[in-house]
Length: 270
Ligand SMILES: C[S@@+](CC[C@H](N)C(=O)[O-])C[C@H]1O[C@@H](n2cnc3c(N)ncnc32)[C@H](O)[C@@H]1O
Image (cartoon, rainbow, N blue to C red; front, side, top):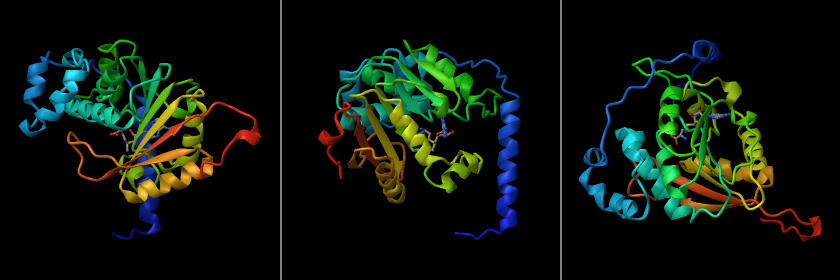
């Protein structure tokens, strides 16, 4: 790993802080214009080797709305999250709405919504990041959310949400400075324990949380965070999906919020 001087690190941090302020000062976006696609056209964007796994999902879940909501990238990521939820979350048994934290441009909201058939909210802190078309993540997220019944794209900070949310998905929370910086956010947004305890507070009794980390170091950090927060999380081990477009191994956690009971009846989860 290259070693940077303090001055270089401070300059890079200042750059991220100014870029952050700049993109949050001018948030207007041109409208998102997408040529209409059909579901068969989206299928053709998928490598043929993935068709059997995708077909197995399409046989059990309703993907009809995806034609309007998805571009090729969104189609692939939606298939992936639907497969992960299908394999690791079980059927939805919690009251909606549900929440996805750090949903980028909302591209995989169709996958979340197909899993439950219910209303999902996606929250994204860095919602005003722009593409070469000058459109923002937020404009894309709102476009996707409008195409799905009961879905909402929330441009904002998870810490400002009140809930309750019956189920929460959190794909790749920032637990270390390096990925946060690589995604262009200032260090002041690295608040893993505060974000985790706030997320837990958004769940009603019986609500569930699914967290997916990238790489073993993150999974170990996640484990420590759950313990520090006193959250009874169950490791799911490596998260496997034939539909994953990602190379680095992923690890999962599942935590279900117990009903409140007398202190004496509570069992130490560890
Ligand atoms: C590593 S990315 C993962 C993105 C997406 N979940 C995925 O799996 O591709 C983490 C995302 O969380 C967002 N994020 C970080 N802190 C947040 C906060 N306090 N509230 C909402 N979103 C946040 C970041 O802006 C970023 O888009």
